[in-house]
Amino acid sequence: MENHLADDLCNLGYDAVPSIELYGIEAFKGKDEKEIIKQLEQDDIAAVLTIVLLNKQKEKYYALKSMYDLTDPYNDNDFSIYYNAIYTKIYQEGYYVNDTYYFWESNFFTMPDQKLEYSVQTQSFNPLNTNSLAHAYGKLIIQDMLSNNIIYNGHKQKE
Image 1 (cartoon, one colour):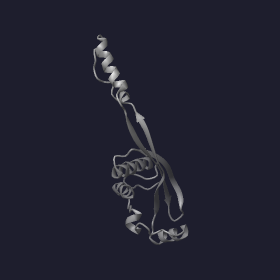
Image 2 (cartoon, helix red, strand yellow; image 1 turned 90 degrees about the horizontal axis):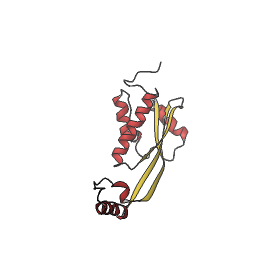
Image 3 (cartoon, helix red, strand yellow; image 1 turned 60 degrees about the horizontal axis):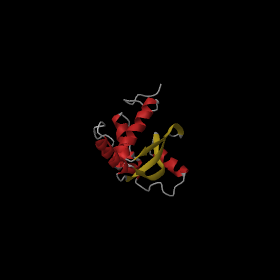
Image 4 (cartoon, one colour; image 1 turned 90 degrees about the vertical axis):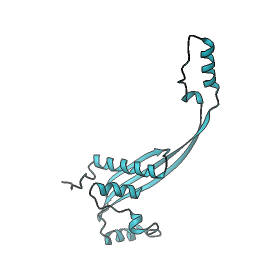
């Protein structure tokens, strides 16, 4: 997600770098917020955009086949054709569906004052894969930040 967000911000003219690229995976592990802020200040970081997975839920439910496939044509003038068509759809065995819901939070802080400029929580479910989820999330956050005038296309400054 960091990579996609950074790429999207770079496409708008910002100098954005994913923290994992700049600092590595465990650079801040075991450090308190004062140490982290000091490091960000030393590296002249202008803003921080966080991404946090708040929760992940899985839900399993039974889906009736008839709920998804009532579109076969049948002649309703002939009772036996109608009955056989409807009977097979209603009594045909269904299947189990697994849905996965992800609940995310992102916050945008300006530095060095550490001012929260933007905060959002979102939900997504059943992504095709991690890459598609990361790409979609990045686009969603960037679009929302643009529409709320948090960032600007072409990297124009706030007036």
